[in-house]
Length: 322
Image (cartoon, rainbow, N blue to C red; front, side):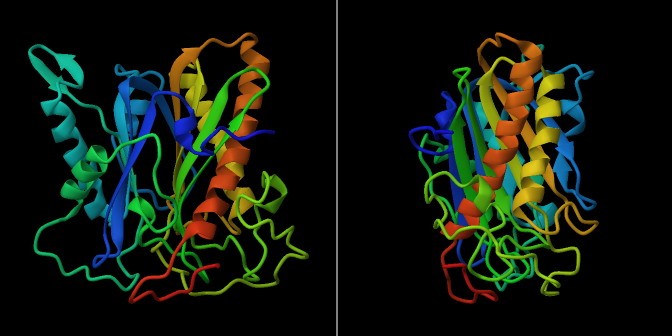
């Protein structure tokens, strides 16, 4: 397979991503947005999710498209990042039309990074401002690793981070993934190899090869409710909300390939799936199958890239992979 030109989720034409972070708090927010509303589904497979407006994404609900998505640190406090994005979009005239009012639809998901060594003694919740700043920064290029929602991410033994990847399919469709990696499990228990190595394209996360054998135990540094990996997969294929939901479910396979263990009772693992509806499917059944597979492999690669790109900062409690 071949990556898109940027090897980012923004290889799906029309999508933009923005990051904002506070290095003292060791946390941040990431926003996915487009010029037009986009179709979105979601699947939650972790046992401890934190979300906003995900019920609205069920295929039987009235609103079928959203204006933006947010991924944020901060646990429940981080849900306010979506409020900052919604307020800013409303001033732009964006949103679901209700009479003479526009109501921006901005679902979001959060991860727990409150115990990562940053200063969390704030008097005012910082995440609304971080969400607004991330929207302002939205572009077709963005930083990976210790930025945005990946700023304060950790794994069992090392720092996590913000990752992204893309792939071009023979059908002419593009698939991309964006993820904040903050798992109870590990992406690289031996500190050298990565579980996602079988899916690597080129040396996008170091080319270190396949894990020689499975570990017999994992570090117990995070065996509590301070985890969660949250992700977005996207495509330009024309998909309904129901099919997006199925793609989100398939993409969770990529999380399990890259993080061991994953989907635990102490993780809130979640995947949004986005369609810009730009390119029709020639064969709805077989194309959807390959889109789901591509979303899973893209997400596995994005997770490894996020961990690989993480960089050290003052006050870190865990080292980086490289």
